[in-house]
Length: 271
Ligand SMILES: Nc1ncnc2c1ncn2[C@@H]1O[C@H](COP(=O)(O)OP(=O)(O)OP(=O)(O)O)[C@@H](O)[C@H]1O
Ligand SMILES: [Mg+2]
Image (cartoon, rainbow, N blue to C red; front, side, top):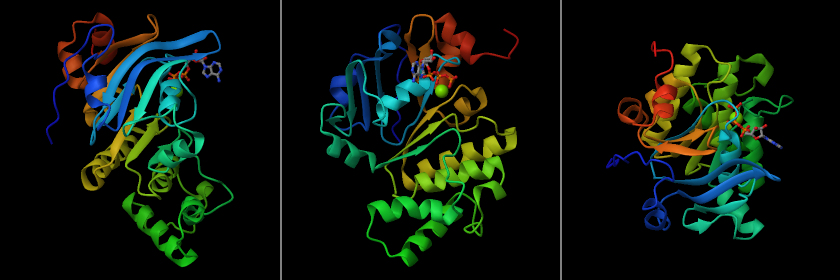
């Protein structure tokens, strides 16, 4: 894969990326500001997610990672700027078209987002029933396949409360994969998981990228995950309320000339 090394950009992002990438990149964020009323969370964001990326949105707690992700998954419009999604301006097309684009997108929320009153198979059949013409029997087959893909073969008839937190997270991934999305979003996938479960989830994310070609966007501040899976990233800063770097996380860790970026990516290594 011709993954270009995106050099770090001090301050205002990657001006060259937005116009160039609009037509073909899965996601181009162009001069985006996110706010709640007059409270600005992040401003002047510019970054591009290329096909096949595992793209990390990182930054300290409360800096606005989840809020930025919400603009990319049709949950919250930006106060300013544009989000280009597969070449279309996500917040300028009508609601129906936007929901159509979202069918190509899977989202795994922090909690796993499973319905507790339904078995794992029923959870996965839900979006299939809503968006496809599959018979109940075929939908169940798809559910079995997706569960097998995340290492949960044989757990079709278990309820979420009957499996561990790590397994619930993986079942959430299986459900997000139900409609064969081109893009998969994760908000803090390893939150609350032990290091081994967390590493398994990282392996699963890489497997999905490599075997299905899924483009993956991950919100996280877990360093181990960031370095294990990230091919590109944006670093959000809570102080200046904007991005302070974009690029390969390992490259940024070793070469960034921004002290904030270096500090964030070298935590726990004795300063
Ligand atoms: N619905 C909301 N209404 C008003 N302010 C909000 C809302 N959701 C989040 N915020 C504020 O926006 C800021 C960013 O929150 P956000 O959840 O995006 O941060 P985060 O980086 O994802 O944090 P964490 O690492 O804790 O998950 C915070 O100051 C938060 O209080
Ligand atoms: Mg968050």
